[in-house]
Length: 156
Image 1 (cartoon, rainbow, N blue to C red):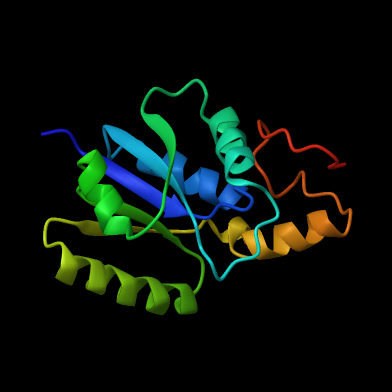
Image 2: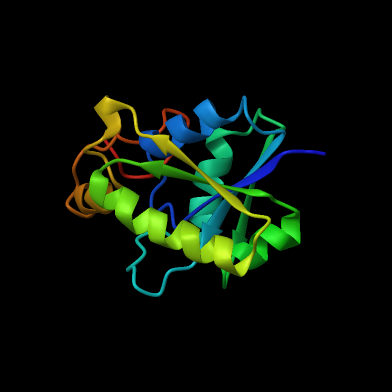
């Protein structure tokens, strides 16, 4: 049976921390869907189409990675693409508590799903999309925080 995972998030923008989690997980899975979701609680800087394009630039030469978008429950998207795993990165203890609760609810709703956690590399711990987004909004240089292959206009 093919091992399929999804890596869900809003990815506004996709960071080097996200890239690291996907790269490290590739050896465990036959296919990883990077699932760009909609979160009504977040004020997006980039459109859905832009976010998908940026992520596709990063993994354009990797047939194991596919970038898609979804709305609604993550477990419904898992069912749609036959994924048995949800991939999540953890930067802090607070991330763990938040992600643990979501994973347990997902498991209760869909018993066939397993959530796999990857600890963020130490050098990526302070990097998150909210901070990177704020740096972009204020004209700062984010090149150290986003994947080298991402081409975002107006970054230094």
